[in-house]
Image (tube, rainbow, N blue to C red; front, side, top):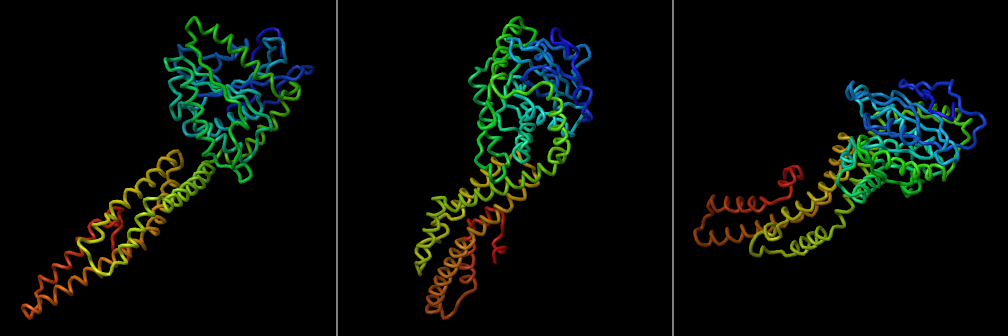
Length: 429
């Protein structure tokens, strides 16, 4: 490629996933830095690369509407703006486009390829999308993180992951950075990891940088891009580099491995990961419930109350407000489960929520049954005493008198946790 002026970028990988074998780079070039860009369609990725590196990637023609311009993965070789190693610049097809619909396999492959071959990856997004799920690119990063962990496509080096937030708004940079880093850490924590990498930290794999840029039509855009160029070159040339002449062979090998990896092609991987994480979260909530101080105190109260052989005053159920108090704790843990699993596959979420519900019921059941049995014995005792007293006075026992105690026992069960938790008393025998 001509290193003196912008040359027409070459198609490296077609949008059908075919690797182009005719790519040639300067054979005698020294070690090169590799910079790639990923992000949603129509966010100005190609425009940004052209401003940063003097490349000639095709950009969107606004007169044709919001269309996908870059199709597949393109690249070009440029001299370093600062006179250092040359730069291999990679432009990628935008994600979240209508043309591919629900088929996001190529998006995942592209993002993973970019992270695997590059020193620096620019995540291009709009400032207003920072707190959005799809607009912020979180599903894409989550999938890539998971496959990186499982397949280890990444190298031992760290990748500079630079979030370039376009169309700067009034939100301060430090607040945007705080939101982004918090989101990344949450995704990383929820990422399924092999046992050996359970404690792997995000900072072991990535150096996170966050910058903002004004709209490209504003006069300050060019000046701010120039400052960003210096920073990106400093990051890109400070780490491991590759001889440009060897890049194509290495890239072809990595792309071949990625294309063969079904974890990126099929939704089954997402379901599998969801199942593993939802089961872990359900188990954690169940164990946490058992250690809950309020629940332990309720069990203690029931134990002490059921040691009393005679009924004292009102029903122990009403006295202890067992159903109400247990339900408050119960609902808290189910709500926490819902919050922690909200991004996982719905079928797996429901499956393990039911498992959590069943486990909580098994924990509550013996305590509740102990209390019900005590209520029964106490009510029966009260009935016997009342019956004997009535027989002494009238030499007879009326049906209404018997029904009175049946009703009394039933009323005592009105606050039963099974009623509040959606399970009938009969279901527990």
